[in-house]
Every structure is written in structure tokens, then in C-alpha cells.
Amino acid sequence: MDKSEEIKEQQLYIEKIYKINKDKNLKYNILTMGCQLNENDSEKLCGMLEKMGYTQTNNVKEADIAIFNTCCVRENAEDKLFGKLGELKKIKEEKGIIIAIGGCMMQEKHITDKIKESYPFVDILFGTHTLHKFPEDLYKVLEDKKKLEDIIDIDGEIYEGIPIKRDSNIKASVTIMNGCNNFCSYCIVPYVRGRERSRQPKSIINEIKELASQGYKEITLLGQNVNSYLKVEREKNIFFEEYKGINSFATLLKAINQIDGIERIRFISPHPKDFTDDVIEAIAECDKICKLVHLPLQAGNTRVLKEMNRKYTKEQYLNLVEKMKNKIPNLTLSTDIIVGFPGETDLEFEDTLDVVKKVNFEQVYMFIYSRRIGTPGDRMENQISEEQKHKRFNKLKDLVEKQIEKNNKKYINTIQKVLVEGESKNNKELLTGRTDSNKVVIFKGDKNLIGKMINLKIISEHMWYLKGEI
Ligand code: SAH
Ligand code: SF4
Ligand code: F3S
Image 1 (cartoon, helix red, strand yellow):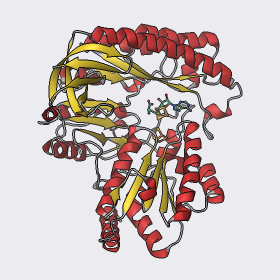
Image 2 (image 1 turned 120 degrees about the vertical axis):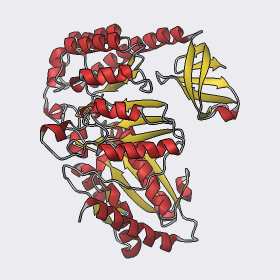
Image 3 (image 1 turned 135 degrees about the vertical axis):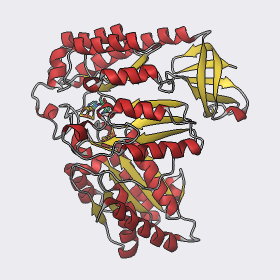
């Protein structure tokens, strides 16, 4: 069966479940962990569930079906899942709720084995490659009242046409590629998300045009490695249909920049090794592309980077940043950093601090190295003690916070273009929006500004947000 037929078949399951659920006022609760790719997958699960006649509830005790979309990139994720399962067990005993666990962690056999052994009340286990089959899996569970496991380990496919219900009506995420071929030695993602594969240019453009016509203003392009969009296809001569001249990440950016109605374009995450000149030029040239670029560093020391299999040196990273800063006016950068990779010495960690000082990031996402079963990093013998890792983490955090404070001060008295996203969560009297550099700005204003791009004067700064006035 080809993929569009598979999706049509799932549509039939959606209709069957809709008939079963009709007039029952059934509810679903969904909890999502992990990155924006997972959030985008959850939006698809929500889309399918709503078409099956379920409505969303934030209170799991009210739900008829509870879904947990998992992440396994770091250890604490596992504690969260098993804690949650304990909670769901009680609800299951009180009422016959259906429990479905999906996402990246389900691609790890030691985890699914543990669930089947210790949490046998879970109804559906589904993986990252079978998300589109959720209607069929649910139908079988509803009909047969049996447990179901739908997890496969494949390179992966791209499915178009899965229903979607988005969290916002102003900003939308669009996945442009799936999987990862980089195998950084600490990372589990390539094992749970399969090999790199890109969506067809035409499908992406049509989706974004549709979003523009629905009034969406900001698009975030998603992928584990967005700037290698269509790279595997080009290198291995895998068929793709060139559309509007799109045959690379740079040409994709340029084409999206032409779409009327879209005012901002962001993307995560690019890999420094694939940051080619044409991408830098596209960012500089295209007025809608935000000038905040997320450029994951991971570590500042060249030996550690080599052990991590990152394929760039400290100098290459710094040179790339220099080149970008020279070519892209008003560029700001954010990054991801791991402290305490096996074998990292105090002296080598200083290189990470050095790069942070030199680049002056707008935002740094800091992580303590976490051993992932099945990765080369986990098999390395020179693991760092937890105490040492925490010491380094705190040192990095101090530096980053000082820099953010200093950077925030630069915003005061400047005029910033802000996309207004809605009411502030903490104070309904105020509105909230974001700058081009993704800083949150809180300000007083009329609700009809929501969804608009406006100019604000920044009047004060507070670590995680700025205050502005019209
Ligand atoms: N593909 C993206 C993001 C992958 S996961 C990229 O390459 O940037 C997001 C971040 O989690 C990574 O950038 C890395 O900083 C962190 N991470 C991944 N594996 C980790 C591990 N085993 N321990 C700690 N942090 C990790
Ligand atoms: Fe993980 Fe590296 Fe792939 Fe990012 S590029 S998903 S860090 S293996
Ligand atoms: Fe986590 Fe999977 Fe994303 S492991 S970070 S949810 S790709």
C-alpha cells in the first residue's frame, strides 16, 4: 500500500471511532515531553483525536483516554514517565480510562520491557514510526479490549495528510525533515527517530500557504538537522520533486520568505557543520527570517568535540560565528551546551566557558551529560562524577546569567518589533509577545493587538522577560 492510501485507511478508522464515540462527550488528556518535534507530533495526535470525536481536557481525572508522548534524550525523562504511570494506575482503577504511551522512549526496548512487566495496565504502546496509525491502534483496543503494541524499528517514512490541531493560531511549527544521521556519541535521537529524510518541497510550501491563509504569522521549521534539508536526497540520488527552485535548505528559506501573510520565519536546529554560505546569505537577505540563530555548540574543546563526533573544532565554530556576525546585521545567537561529557577535564571545560564569553549568546540551554543506553558515550570508561558535573554546570550557569543580564540591559530604550501572542499568563491585564531575538516582552495594550506585529519601546529588563510600552 502506498503512503497516501495508508493515510486514507486511517481516515476510515477515524470515522469508525467517531461513530462509536458520537454523543458520548468523551475527553482526552495529552502530556508531551521533549523537543518541538515531539510537540508537533502531539499536535497531530490531537488532530486525530478531535476528528474521532474527543475533546481536550487539561485534567487527566476527567479524561477517557490519556496519552503520554515521551522523550528520552536525558535521564530525568524516565523518572517523569514512571512517576506519571503510578498516577495513571490509580485513575485506571477508579474508572476504565484508556492509557496510551508513545514517542521516542517507546523505541527503547529496555523501557517497553519495563512497562510491560511493571505497568501491565497500559493499553497502547506506540513508537515514533507508527504515529500515523494511532486511529487503527485505538480502534483495535476499543473493539477487542486487548492491549496493543505498535512499535517498529525502521529508517522511517514521511506521511502527509495527518490531521493536526495546533496549540496556537498565531505561531505554527512545520516539520521539514525527520531523523538524524549524525550520531553524536552522547545522543539517543538517531536510534529512536531513524535516518534523515526530508519532506517534499511542494508539501511544505502548500502547508505554509495554508497556514498563512488561516492567519498564522510566524512559522518555525523543525528538524533534528534542518540545514541538511534534502542533503541525503541530493547525495544519494533519492528522488525529490524540485518545486519553485527548492533543492536545499537555503532555497527553501527563500521560497518561504515569499509567502504573503507570513511575517516571521524561525528554524531549529541547524548543525554547525552544515551551515553553508548559501544559508548565511539567505538569512541575511530574507527580511522575514529572524536574526536569532540557534547554533548548538555542545562543548568548546576540540578534543571533546571530536569524542562527541560533532565534526567541527573550537576554531571552526568561532570562525563560523564570526562569518555569520559579519554577514548578518543584528545577528543574535543561542546554543545548547552539555557539561561533563566522559573524559572532559576541568581545563577542557574552560574552553566551553571561553567560547561562551567570546560569542556572547542571547540564550544558552545547558545540560548535564546523561548516559544513554546504546550510545558510544555510555560505553566510555572515563565517566565524570555527578558532583564534578554539577560544579561545572553551576559555573557555566553563573557566567550565562551574568551575560544575559548584561545583554538585556542593551534592550532598554530601544524600539523592538514584537509579535503579540496573547494575554500574559501571570497577569491577564497585560499582553505578551516576542522580539525577533525571541525575548518575551510584557506590556499594556488593547486585546485587538493580539496576532499583530507592533513596535514597542523597552522600558525595563527582568532576567527572563522585558517590559515594554507602546
Ligand atoms: N538535533 C538537535 C537537538 C537534539 S537534542 C541538535 O543537534 O542540536 C537537544 C539537546 O539535548 C542537544 O543539543 C544536547 O545539547 C542535549 N543532549 C542530547 N543528548 C544528551 C545527553 N545524553 N545528555 C545531556 N544532554 C543531551
Ligand atoms: Fe543528537 Fe547530534 Fe543528531 Fe542532534 S545532531 S539529534 S545532538 S545525534
Ligand atoms: Fe526527546 Fe525525541 Fe525530541 S528524544 S528531544 S522528543 S526527538
